[in-house]
Length: 541
Image (cartoon, rainbow, N blue to C red):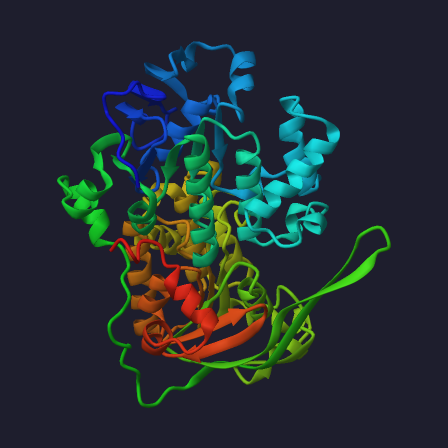
């Protein structure tokens, strides 16, 4: 981190900014009377809970506010130019070249009908950068720089072929393609495993140092703040409640809200959880295999990826197995196979005395309410045409588990448990932030009172205080209902907090298995050691 003089002319200056919300919201403003500066070559981190106005601030700077929101008061100056007064044609020239943004959700931001290479090239084309040959080379260079494997091949892939972390790296490559003066990073590492996160943070830092680029980094991870921030501003419900240097805010927070956020940061558990002497089996996985086969290239060569390679484990009632590993290690594929959303090649999954892999979808239907999934992507997993209430109740009603009235009562109760107002029942997904949508997904899974939950990055999109609440909620349900969980996560601190056993995956294989104390404090495998070493903020703590 670098010292920056506050006397220098800021590259970006925000003054008294207020953005009004439309009706039917819990407050009149998304952001209200906020003021801050971004200095040249500085990394400014914006911290706050989901719905605090962080992303709205970023989108206002970019001129990308939705039509339902309006800037009521304030100004935004970029190197002396009043951005709020510029016509759309002038803003378009600045986007990408002067100010660029990495969006939080890569699946929604990427065009599913274009290859990733074409999407990066489109950024260069729009600004008439170089020749066709230089643009083609720049695409490969950027894919290499953000750590994507085999750039010459992967540039021809479509977004759905990539993992969540790989899609996010494509977004980062697009944002950095023109070497902007200001990079706005809206939760760019939320979906990434710790080693890739460390690579991306290092990448942004290297590009910043080379070009003197300024970075506005929106995150809910205080480990990231400790790793990269020069200064920090803290937002709560649209208001700026505290700002200062990173060390001031982290070591001596002044505002009660900041103190609450820092107290909620997950820490490595010192000792393993006590386990019952008698532990009935909830789920048993034996020699599970799943290989993806795709044809690629001009000659249509067959390419095989072993996503799940001979995995076995036993999950007991009332216990949690944490599955950790890098993006593309097979964690999510494992979850989908367990849920019978993807067919396995071979092996057994024993649940309630039946091998679910051998069952047809029709015969598996009676078991589906008993094993539920919390999906990784809160944007793609909710039907935009359904209200939250419909999303929560349609399943239990279809399975004849609850009447309409009982389903509504249960849904409103669960919405409260996961930190939302009961009034959310009648609202649509687009009215919620990413973290709020994830909470809806958690409530939906709990509607069935399942015996097993497969949680695929269930808290990765949540701010630390809500994350702590949700982890506490899931742990309470686990204890009270003897619920068994397969908890897939890239956050090793979260895995340590919630898991009885840890399964480490690397390129489809299980490389290490054991209790958290052994995995995180005395790892035996080189790969596990690299994961632990890459935990953000570990050195700064």
